[in-house]
Length: 390
Image (cartoon, rainbow, N blue to C red; front, side, top):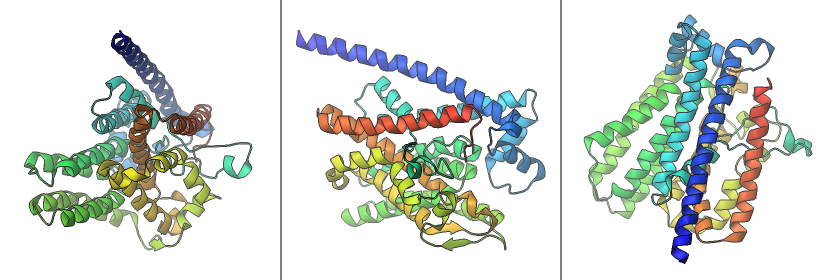
């Protein structure tokens, strides 16, 4: 009898999560089609974004380093271009949610798919904690510093889903490449995903490739050099994207702009309290880490989520671009994404707390997650009312 009740409760919970997924899909789509439509037609009265600049780059041929400029420029030539571009950008956001769902389902293979969908929506509605009653916590010059979800930059929006899938593909290698041979198809898909990600925005590949290199070296030593071909294949898969990055950078950097080293120089140009902003951007993952720190040494998937975040934060903390683009924060983008991936693997550990019935851990982490979600709600509704994204 108890088993029947548990099955019924599980079914109701699954149905609730399915209903939430439908509601999120409809509401999310409506909000962002509206926002991107406003960014296209109403930028002169608010709704600031990079969208029209990116279309202009295509028309003038300047700074043509992103595939997104080409796609936006071509869409802009079609009838009802504003609507088409709004639907296109929203579709990419939804693809990011789906990619997150695929990542989480891989991390939690036995979890009900509708529950995983809700987790994926939560990751894509994750924002740094904002506390308006405390001035130094509630006000920042650049609102979205180190935030997984960015809505004013089309190149980041396009990069995000393919970057998530690149991470997912590498996680599949982590589990098997020490004993199973990597096929040509697997190599081509992994290489293609990273190349497409880089074609949209080059920032992802630098931090990701360094994290991948660290894992390859550690695993190679631990496995005493066995299956060396697999390690070579995974390592070489990154090379086409790195080559493309150098090509892109050759178009971006000139005599007026250089890559420099300096502690938090790039972050300080964007924010009055950069270290505080970094902490408030990941309170939930930090809480989960406190409860799951032992798993860093036992769970390679969780460990990689932490490693890629630390690698990208190191780049953000120490590398910056001087000259006229200092305030653009071009070495912050990879950390935006890395924080989001760490949030996703933290959701995987949050689920473990739930399954272990760790009431204290669930209450504390849920509270911080709720605070992140309220920050997202506040930010998105401000954008829909013409507020400044940056």
